[in-house]
Length: 293
Image 1 (cartoon, helix red, strand yellow):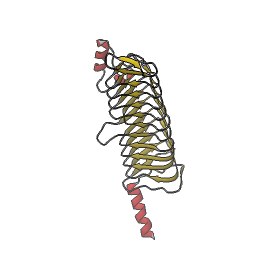
Image 2: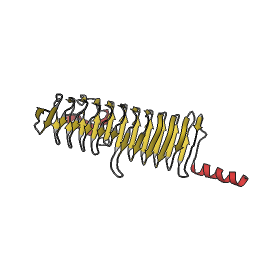
Image 3: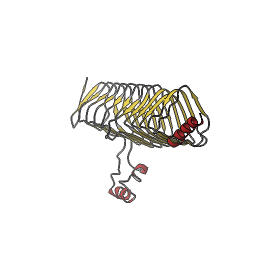
Image 4: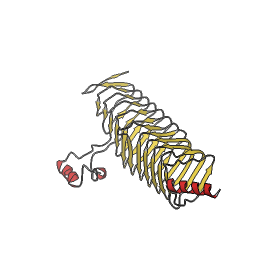
């Protein structure tokens, strides 16, 4: 018996370094694989209700709270500092890298992250049921947030590259953002329900850089393209984008700042949209041609 206990003690401390966490409550099955690094610092709380599986995951928490029901982590990286993660039934991270710092993430039933990177810094991330971020191995699929908020309703799938800096991104229910699409939000982008956004589209609620060449020089001298100045530039023009319910945006479309797309409208492939669109409109070509549906 002593040999058996000694064996399990070696296995636990070799493969699962735990820095004496506090307030751990586990009801049901709890499994940590040999390849997992699982570290919880002081003043932390982990609550697992039901099954849990941290297969090949690397998890590091500091002054954080995790409350999960039925969680699975496959080949995932999770880092949380002074953060809260709250999930309900069935949480699945597979081949994902998740970094949460001074932020909170809340998800409901069937919150899934596959081959996707979440980097949430000083932000709020709330998703409804059947939410999914997924990409492909080797592709650049990221969701990055700084001083921002994200609110998504039920049954949404995101494959796009999303950056939200000092802004708010809202997505309604049953909406889809396809692969290769890029969303850059620095003030506000609102996407309604039953919205389909195709491949390789761009949603841009800001000009990215100043039109004044002297300001661009200052930006470069201050460190761009490392991004140190760009994300702090408050002088560039910004204006919210709103995409109403039941809109279909075709492949290679660009939607620029200040545009509202009325409900049930279709934006044809390759369109550069700089002006707002009425409900039930079909927009195509450059310059845009418009007619009712």
